[in-house]
Image (tube, rainbow, N blue to C red; front, side, top):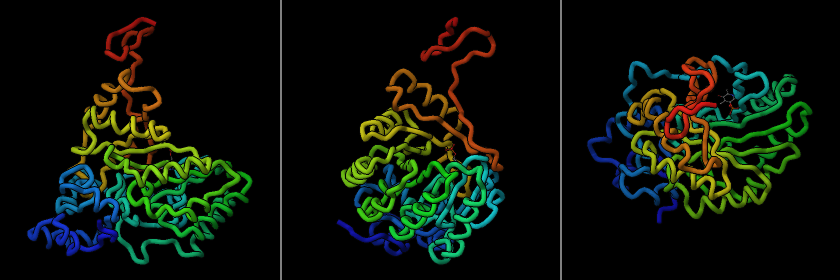
Length: 339
Ligand SMILES: *Cc1c(COP(=O)(O)O)cnc(C)c1O
């Protein structure tokens, strides 16, 4: 059993995760996207092209930017008044305590690049971001988002939660994370204790494949639930990982079984180098429609697209209202029914 996070191309080669021939291109790639495969994921990878290997092992094709891929596909930068804050919707705001991805999740639907200092906001920048939230009374919900907030020290997390607790107009805190699945040993009791909050605190966990549901992840999820934290899920629709009905069904059923309510299934953002995971929207809609009626309604996520250019997230259906003929809908088998 490995107990070390792999961080270099050389270590990937030692584990037979890559070939000699791939070394030069991956050396270059690692200048842009940091390498980090947690010990848990190292142990879970059986072959380089299994659903875990595909997600966590860097691939030379990621250096290729296709013409329709954008550096900042959802225009987070344009919507950022100060470092650490992304404000797109009136009532809620993203607080990103890490400016770049710490890559415990390495492959997100939104790629963030390697930077100095692991991308941590400085103490002053964090105070400024929290002050910005205090000064904007329309903000009701603060969403801690990636880089993964659970990479923060318990001390820093506690400070953020305590400060938000004291801002009267903030009613809800939400944390988006992949750490419970991708690096469960990072979820220490101290870190979970730091989430103690007077305000409603929701956690949205990210997993893309049933194989990610390990006993170690289950212990973390159980502890979060015992702490009274409601859990939601997000997943990204990814080619060769979860783009078939059986895998998607199993993934969603695993969430429900673990008391996690499926929230979003994301259409992949067209970030540079992600083409090898691209699934068409048409296929996504077909997959969702194949699940309608087949799985419990509890398992049903909203399939969403973050519109390129920063225009927000919208559901992509499938839809059952029949605009051609008023007073009719499609049933789960696509037969027209009068209503
Ligand atoms: C995704 C996102 C949110 C949260 O959207 P919900 O639909 O409420 O989950 C908020 N702000 C920004 C900038 C986002 O990208």
